[in-house]
Image (cartoon, rainbow, N blue to C red; front, side, top):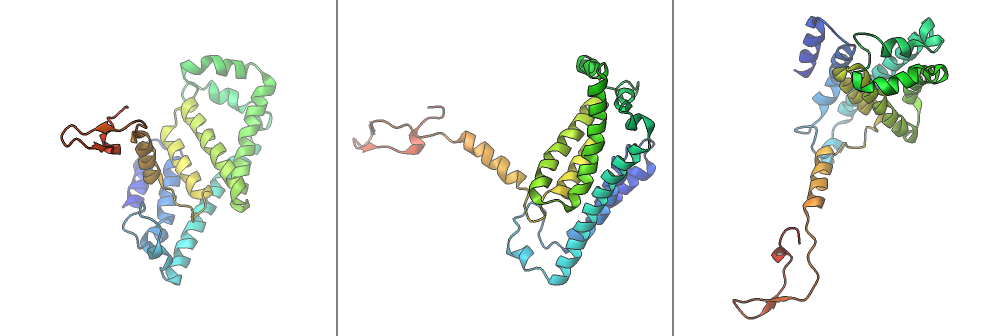
Length: 234
């Protein structure tokens, strides 16, 4: 259903930004994983149920996951090498035209920092070539060790967050961030978002018991102290 929805959107949408096709392709390539995963849904803990899955299912799932990674790597390879044949990217001036484009240019509240960047030739060229180098590095991450991929994951998310802020391509950036997480995070490292958020909220809602002399129990005359007797905010 997810793949059919993504494919239908990119097939009939009047304007597409590239993220629509990638979302459709990744949803299709994820089918081997989703159809061989014995869990009820993807937030369940990866325990014995997944480990005990048959060898055939695991091979099919691993093949689908590898194809997803190759697909994302191919996107960044094309994005980096395709720019090298364009004169504006080669001479370091492409970002000037993108930032001043009437449709995809930066918003008004960023006019000051953008003008400072556009007025400096060396900084403009550095920013232009850096984006190409980052995309090339993201392609090479397909064969990099985990530690390097973790660094590139942060850099890639920041890169696409900047694209969303400057060019307003929100859905494209969301798809690319999701693709980067699928591409660069280790397959055996669970993304415990729900659990971590619950732990974060629980840690801040916890009220540390007050340390001090016990208070008498007026009803029974004995002395008791319980952590639950401490009022919130004490």
